[in-house]
Amino acid sequence: MTRIILCGCCGAMGRIITDLARDDSGVEVVAGVDVVPNREVKYPIFASIDDCEIEADVVIDFSRPDALADILNYCEQRQIPAVLCTTGYSDEQLNDIEESTKRVPILRSANMSLGINVLMKLLKDATKVFGNEGFDIEIVEKHHNKKVDAPSGTALALADAVNDAAGNSYHYVYDRSERSEARDAHEIGISAVRGGTIVGDHDVIFAGSDEVITFSHRAYSKAVFGKGALAAAKFMKGRKPGRYDMSDVIGG
Image (cartoon, rainbow, N blue to C red; front, side):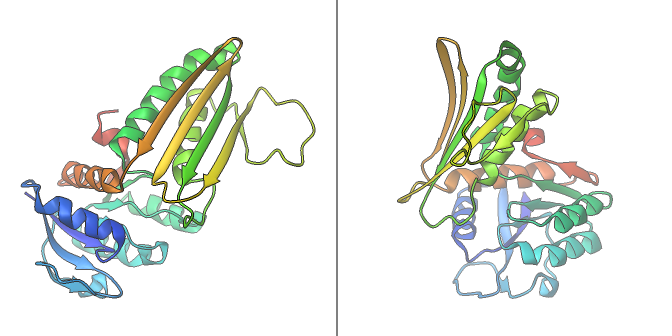
């Protein structure tokens, strides 16, 4: 049994993880943390993680970037792993996470979906073939009209997976509206679409002469991210200090 402290338990993803955990005999949410504890659940909710004295095996964070410092400090003091699912960290915060990995096990991922992380593995293999054959690479991501950042963190993570496999020989282009020139062979174009209630669509296009190969992922509900977070929590229980990501969870 993996005992979880869930930060952001009253948010959309917190509610989903609570429901998923209820049907998973391998995990239990033993405490929640939220600035507005407005839910009736079987576990206690604290306004601050510092107030939580309940024993747990791992912390899952689906809250806000400004909660990071308290979460890292809590995990270091109690020597328990953290699964960081929040996005939008500053460069300084990313450095703080990296420093904390020297003392506690931390898993951070731009997208907790198992499917997306398998896709990243596939893209690395595809890039080694198509990149060397001069295929152009484009990424198109689509999300709901309430999403404020663009491109998505997942789109950037997919681009990074491609670029890593190509020895970081590509640069990213986000907008061609003011450019009047032919496409650079060493660019990855990244386009964002916002509309309706799209949960998350990502297409990675390898366009060559006379053929096009497209890798696609469609998220039909946010439950896919919750399932991945719970899988990560089970994986992180009892791990040694260090940096982990979802590729470790899926055996990458």
